[in-house]
Amino acid sequence: MSNAAFDISVTDNVVLVCIDDDGCRQRVTAVLREEWPVRTAIDSEAALDSLDEAVSVVLVDARDGIEQAIPRPQRDERPFELAALVDESIDGTDRAIECVTKPISPQTLRATVERLQRRVEYDQLLGRYYAVASEYAATASGHKREPEAVSELKERLSTMRTRLDELADGLDDHDAFSVALGTPDETEPPDE
Amino acid sequence: MTENFDLGPAVADATNVLLVAPGVGDTADRLCCDVLTADGLPEHVVGVTISDGPEEKATRWRELLGPAPSLSMLGIDGVTRSAAVQQAPTADDTTVEYLDSSEPIRELGERIATKIHRETDTAVCFDSITDLQECMGRETAFEFLHVLGSRVRAGGATGYYYIDRTVHDEETMTLYSTLFDAAIEVGSDTDGGN
Image 1: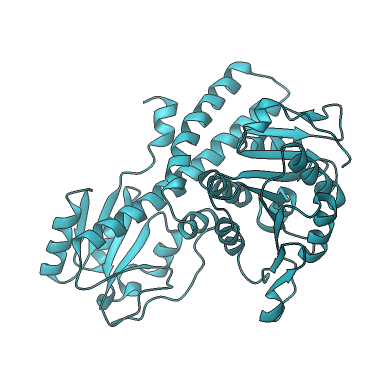
Image 2: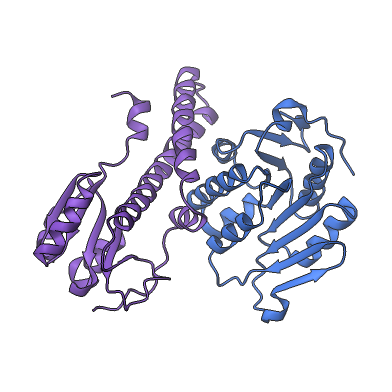
């Protein structure tokens, strides 16, 4: 894979579904598997065993407890986005964790995961763009002028920038700035 | 106006432009306003100040720009104000908004984005990248600027972002330049646009 292709291929887009209830887990999985690779887990231990760099979105049932499903240290690392299924009676707005209200609409579920996937991809590509831009800046400003290396880095930046701009355009203002600045540590939805 | 700019096609067609000069404060104000004037005044100017008082800055800009265009000045000045003073309309179609410094810079970015509309010819003038980096470090400042630039582009506006050349080394200047379509540098042997 060329450097340019590697630069913009930043996520495997795996969705990890951690729901205790068999029926709910199967319904959610069936919807999501139409679009993304999906892993399932019935409890926190299985979820943590399955959590790796390929996972970009984790979906849990808030009834089981967010903290129990994915403990704070793993969430604080946050290479993934977290979403919780919540009951209709719970206000799902104004939270750091995305909420999907039950009963689950397949359309809403897909739209939510798609938005979170875009956030993850933008986050990862933005970080990578900064790294390549830093390398370019160091090389272009260095005492040993290396025109070929500078030219190659410039080309990589151009390719990445095109994809980066596409991703940014697909995010709303709140999501885009939150990705760039990091999501603040706010309150969680109450355990059900 | 202190400088007459022949911006050239590269800058005239650019969406996000880096403004480079030595110093801050009045230098940034004059350069931003001179470039706006040279490029043809837009209908609306969104001024952003990280460290200066927005009301004072708005007053200076109004003196430099004249009675047109409409002006929104957003500032973070570290003073908690009453809700009544948070948004203070002034004369000459100028609005000054204070953002409480306890709010994250994210709020500033979102507020800027709300003031960009495709149906109105808008320029965003950001003062300054130097102050932004001071607040949040180089990497976060860099990423914030990419998002802001994307909002400017999506809204059909033009963005001008000031940086103090005396504070940053060449490597950092080159790093930031990767975010912009063109640069204007004054106060050196390379006066003018490129």
